[in-house]
Amino acid sequence: MIDPARATLGEAAAALARGELTSEALTRTCLERAHRLNPTLNCFLRIEDEAALAAARRADAARASGHPLGVLHGVPIAVKDMFYDPARETSSGSEIRRGFRGAATATALARLKAAGAIVLGALNMTEFALGPTGHNPFYGACHNPWNPLHIAGGSSSGSGAAVAARIAFGTLGSDTGGSIRLPAAANGILGIKPTYGRVPRTGAMPLSWSIDHVGPLARTAADLARLLGVVAGHDPADPSSSRRAVPDYEAGLDRGVAGLRLGVPRNFFFDDVEPAVGRALEAALAALAGAGARRVAVRVPAAEHLTELGRTVVYTEAAALHGHWLRTRPQDYSPQVRARVATGVAIPAAAYAEALQLRALLLRRFCDEVFGDCDVLVTPALAIEVPTLAATDVGGSASMWSTIARLLQCVAPFNFLGVPALSLPVGFTPAGLPVGLQLVGRPFAEATLLGVAAAYQRLTDWHERLPPVG
Amino acid sequence: MNDRETAVVDAATVDALARLLGYPPLDAETAARIAAGASNAVAAVRATATVPLFDAEPGNYLAELERLAGPGP
Image 1: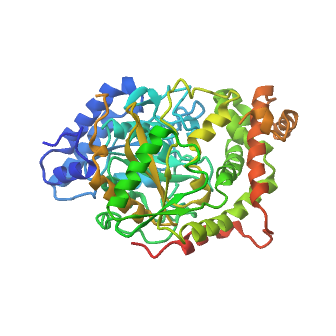
Image 2: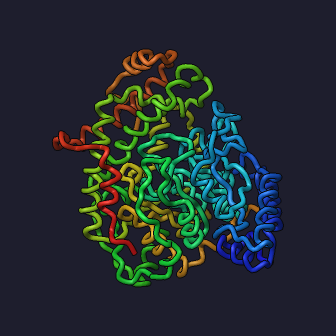
Image 3: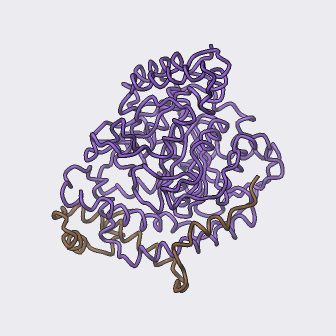
């Protein structure tokens, strides 16, 4: 019998396939863990015992009858509460959509289920996926398993905490300004924002149709590769999804980093890194260099403007999506989210259109100038130590924008560009809080990023450490 | 970033635009936050739009992502 608190997703899937345990037994263990830890972490909005156990029993029956479902057969996972499923509520972390049921299952969720995954429940998130801290005035804040006084990051707060706390073997999140990578960094796990269009957005709550990305979070590069391989690929229902073939992400994980050029930005991203974070990042770069990677200095063009260009698009589209409710139910938003979605009213339409025109131009420039000199760009995922919930509980106050900007400084620029970006856990500060290194690649270079992450995890054991809760 | 230092659009203009769209009146604090956020966003567009965009077609963005993809692993 494997220990669910220590086993990876891949190990759990293999043990299930070998018949060493049943999905029902494994799911019960994960549900027990969820019930035990959720009062401390608040990472689940709903733990769905009956549905999960019923799905697990169906998975066991399918296996017994010789019908394997896929690479996630019987493995317990969980999803951010913004992926529609007609069988259950999808609140999007909001008061406005409390009790809402989508008409059709989100494509990414449907693909996970078709691959055999067991959904344990719906994970906490920031209201309407708009906020980097994991505070939620309607459902309560999500807490960090490494220290519950600290943020789990946002907006996929529960997606980060549930994996770190070893409740779920993997989770699904969304990322419009860092919402997968920030919780991954804060919780000491991996998360990938794939290339725009790599994973269909069909049935995922929209925040900004031009900038939204869907992606997985997991504890190892191999687990992340498996989950990404399941959810990636064209969906006719999402015209923005790419028809480009999905590679076998697991096949290339052992290729190593010898000769790989790691680009370290000399501008913007390392300008204000806190010392404890910087030391962990330097140690990670040294470990990769020791495995044969070559460190080169690069300059990221327009780096200081990319986040605000993204916001020009996000807030304009969010204001359109939320227009009806901003007119009729403004009192049902938190002050911060109301102010942020309403920011679109003061952005001229011409600025929105220009930002969209600039996107391909700046993407071209970014690829030419950065990837002419390196294969993978490396930056901090979060330049500061994971802050406390108290310090970041700013609501709609005067420090709202500065707090958000500091947390999203290194992750949000890549949403506007649409290139793939992965947060990799690379150690802890002396206070015991996780540090994340961000790997950024050319469009559709997810396999390269996963290969670097896998090589790093072969050199280190950060991903095997258990958080103090549970 | 302090709201009052960075806002170019003023809170009264924000409130007028919100009313134009049929929103209920905004309180002064919320309007100030929106003014600051919108001003920063638009300033980034102004700072980066330094060449004519007359022939730039936003609909080509996904094709550009695919064109710029490397050969793969």
